[in-house]
Image 1 (cartoon, rainbow, N blue to C red):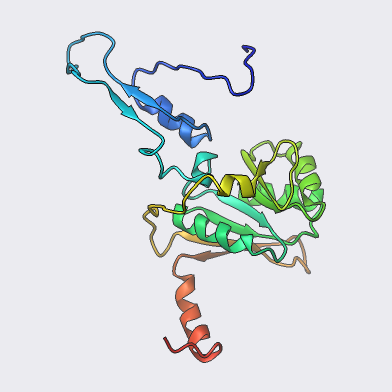
Image 2 (cartoon, one colour):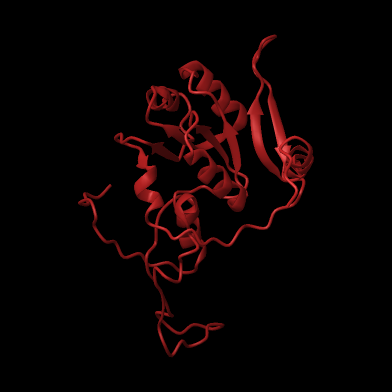
Length: 220
């Protein structure tokens, strides 16, 4: 390990794009990429002009994707009745990640069970309850949570949801998804045993057309 001050800039040399792509998928932010050949080799083409990828060029790497959330990932949502839930779940739909809504009454044992059962890799939690503390305790038994966002509060080791949201303009190129891809995952109440997982796929919203028309009386 090397000692680096917070905010240090590091130059990395890579033989190809794969290592850099892996870093982005793991949650690292790469602000600039210089493309070119260091030496001529058989099968390589000479690059006459160096190319740069600026912040504007990588603007589509948005808030969640910047922190390692990608298509197919399971993301725990413990947001009580905060309106931020709707921003988050729509972002997950566009990424192709799976939202896992949960109550703020869960404790460490409950979270460990859900993390392991659903292979959760990130969480977005309310700062107006004790859930963040329980998540941290659960992470001691389950090390695969790569990103933790806190809504309406700040806490060491957590990303400030509001500050992260302010960094982006909302433009996003949605990921390609299929109607059979998972969209939401709920855990049952567990009244007759441990909670079971119930998955809704991307076709699930179609059912709500009926709800809107005949229950909410929406005509347009």
